[in-house]
Amino acid sequence: MSKVAAYLQEHILGEVSTDPAILKKLGKDASVLEITPEMAVYPRVTNDIRKVARFVYQLAEKGHVMPVTARGGGSDQTGAAIGKGISLVTQAHMNRTFELDSKQKLVRVQPGVNAKALNDALALHGMAIPALPVSSVYSTIGGAVANNASGPLSGKYGDMSEWVHQLEVVLVNGDVLQTERLSKRDLDKKKGLQTFEGEIYRSLDNLIEDNRQLIDDKLVSDIRDNVGYSAITKVKRKDGSFDLTPLIVGSQGTLGIVSEMILKTQYVSTQQTSAFITFVNREAARDLFDKFASLEPSVLEYFDGVLFEEAKKQGKTYPFNAASSDVFDAGVMVGFDDFSDRARQHKLKKLKKLLEGVEAQLTVEDTDDAGQLFSARHVTSYLLSPAGKDISAPPIMDGAYVPNERLEEFISAINTLADKHHVTLPVHTRILDCVVYTRPLLQLHKVSDKQKIFKLLDEYSTVVERCGGHLIAESGEGRVKARFAHRNIGEDVIELFSAVKDIFDNHDILNPGVKKPADLRTLVSDLRTSYDTSDFANHTLYS
Image (cartoon, helix red, strand yellow):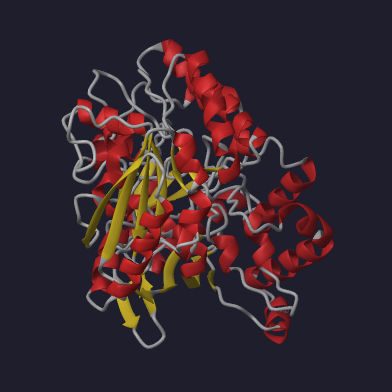
């Protein structure tokens, strides 16, 4: 064990490990990259995180930078949960749910809490955090906040940023900051503090004021965009109030380490009326998107029919494709979660009316989210775990934004891209918030397929931009996508993001290499030699 590891082992309540097998495990997340840390630290309390941060900050002040990467369940698909130096694993011990205030609908938790377990506990009170991603069965709530994650219900209920009330954040020097919406008077008090926290408030307020025109012209948007520190637009309001919470949410551990959080919850219906519609051609499905959305569904998703063909090859069928003749070009899932059964049935009746005269087949199920029809949303798991030997579907393209009115153009363009690179790229999209997914089937032990990864991502990002979209809508860009996501945002915006990072972490200790463009040679050198989902084998493969 190194001197640093031995020192930390002696001074924290948690544990420190330099076991090569453990470090190898922590060198992977759900991305295509692999970066092995020097040690693993398992904090038990916030003070453990403070001691680690303070120690590495003092080292950095002397010219020795030891990176720190906060890690939850390791399900990040962009390489943001891995890094050199210290892997700070919160899932082992910092996994407590402290209290639920049902009157204010707030819950206080630690970052290592399993996201689905939290929602299951809230369900006992008829409540939920509806923005959680589908990976919640094996991811942590801290990871969801760090990535500003979104899920199948986010089209109706928004992303995680809308469900975070306050955060406790350990700053890079070990100080602790409590975020909240401050009045103009309270902001002035914070700016008067002769501490690192005071310096952050002073510097960030000045940065926002100095770049107000740039922020308003290039970053303010109604479209979800998680690239860089775009959430700086939400920090200071016109009334002068100020809140660091939006900036920390989605920062992927690059500005501070979240040690505790207070989240908003909402009463939700346990019943779901689900309808799956199969279409002979996808143009007919696309033409109805706006009309389906006008029914105010909780779920509205589009699937290329080939996804269900792949599932059927692996023996999985659904009520709408059980027969061998049940082949279709596209499918649309519509879900209604209104509390009133009458309201759900009324919407279903309107849905049926919309389909009159359309060459489509409707299958309906009225149950909870464990229903057979609703589970069809997880069909992409059969693409994630293909039957072919050494074949994988790495999530290098998931989570882009493409407007629905450009979807047909987008699908046509990526079909051309697929033909060029001899892969298939079936599309799945969340219609309500226009988040698209597509994954190529690759054999990463082959040099030719490894070389395709960044070529595909490069050309795919161009297609997305050409169709009026952007690459980072569902979570952050991490390491894998940053090079491509930052390509067209402008040097002035990149400089603004760099200034934000410097205010919080001028030594680049916290998750270095994340949320900023990486050299292509570095990305290639960090590529895995294989990719699989075995780390999450105890859970659903859908993510």
